[in-house]
Image 1: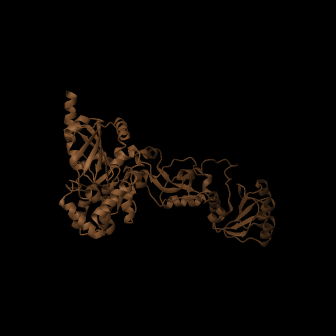
Image 2: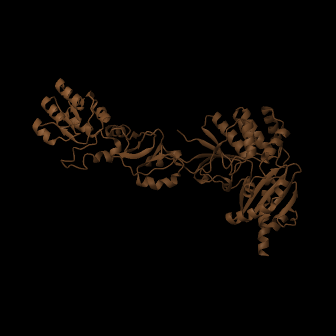
Image 3: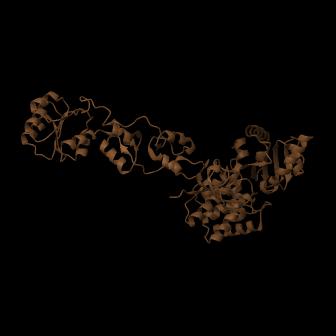
Length: 548
């Protein structure tokens, strides 16, 4: 079965990313694909508001797309219970053509590993005459492996000694010890001698008759009597395989977890043919072998709302990239083969997704329409942003009709939800909630954005925001860190700057404030359309200042 296709937006996924991922995954499902909408980072308040409004479960959280054990492991794995006889363990290994398997307890926790090599050791590990006929005996397992009929239930405790009664009764007494099991035929004198000498169990082979005298003596002394159709040679072999699997399993074993990266597990598989996969409670959830590793396929990914490696979830270089749907500049995501790449100059990715639904002839569900409309209104500042196109307006009208939403009312409700926790967020959370990194000719830029109808709530925290920007720039090696506080009512922006302040001010044609780190810019509301295109000029101005 093919791996699912994960549809995911950029790091710290915003409303357009999550809406587009959800809607495009549903389109792929309608076309017969196994697709999963995904997200990165915490769910923002405005996203949660929209998801709850339309009764949509949050997309699956993906912090990275590295290949994990869960993507490769086999489920429905054969295992054996610690109390099951070795005979059943051997048969399972043979039937399923496996060299080893986990041994579990009543709760499904793995207690050890049983391998073909362990079974082989039974016949060669110790051929001492005094030791070879000792096997840990267990009543239920004896009956199971012998397909036996219990003629008399026993009370005596079973030991670990097995004796074949192929001798005179008087001679046999010399070899008997309390608790032993005696395998014999229908010789009444030998049966009675074994009972009187302290045997805990008799196994009568060949379905031979047992006299009433023997049965009476066995009942009186509490000796277990089992009748089996197997003849003596086979019965002894089966008894040897009646011991619990736990008796010879390997208790010292390596394992892995579903969330482990395959790159980290490979060294273990170099030492072992296979590994059990355990959950946090130690329960068996899968099995991983060298063959599974060789047959592993990378995760299948569709990127929405971005096409830059710096903005993609970690591990994208190991994934199989199937498609990109975006409304930003073409950047630096590379692929090893041709893919579907849809990039158009519109206000949000959701507008492109709607076109894909139309082209496929698939109706848009109300839930998908509600999310797409929310992403469109949020990205275009309720259709006020300079990034808004005529297509965005047409799509907004279409989605509003499908959902019954009023554009202005719905948009204001979304921005109100987005601002609901601004006072509670830490400086770093504010800066990185809607955050993207750009590399321009080797220079690293970072741009965070917050759009709000109450910019003063954030502006009064400028000092602590700038200090955190300084710290993050040192930690992550940013040359310039910009933070946009967008006033969606007055369509203006206060821009906080750390690094290259004069170059940024020159590029924007706006003077720095008294603090030397902020600019008031009328009409600046779009990172994508108004700020990112100026990064090259900022870099040139920075280089000029270095040369001078």
